[in-house]
Image 1 (cartoon, one colour):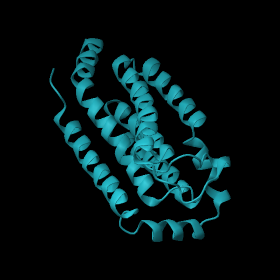
Image 2: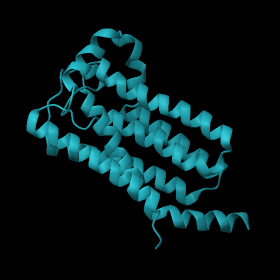
Image 3: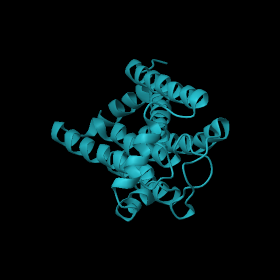
Image 4: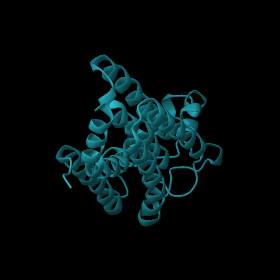
Length: 210
């Protein structure tokens, strides 16, 4: 089986960044300017303004959006392998994120059950799932879009991911490093898994078009 080298490289970079953040947190409790930035963001923006972003990254919101986008990919583009990869990758990120939380056991800056701010803090589950849902869909849709479509969709989805991640800091239920760690964690899983299915997806695409 031929592996996608670019996906493996990006996955490796994401893994190294994730481990670097995790080691820093384990040794010092924080990562770089973690506490200062988190405290500043929580004070600057009203929590009510960003709370709906966090709902999109919640369990119910993320699952709903993932299922809708999976159906779009399957029925609109006939991308069976890609659609299955997208769905299973999201599930893997959601499950393994909870495993990672249990391993690193980091307390949150504050608890807020109304916005899902309970349990351990690192890596951020909302950030991981946001990256898996919207970053994964960008990977999934990339080959079906023209240059303009890639730029527009890439910009919109990137802003959504950043908005959902920053909302967790503004709501004061995560540190900056939790969010970045969540992004890296999801990127690692997406990249590693995509490296294994990329060649099969290309074969399916060739078979369908012929």
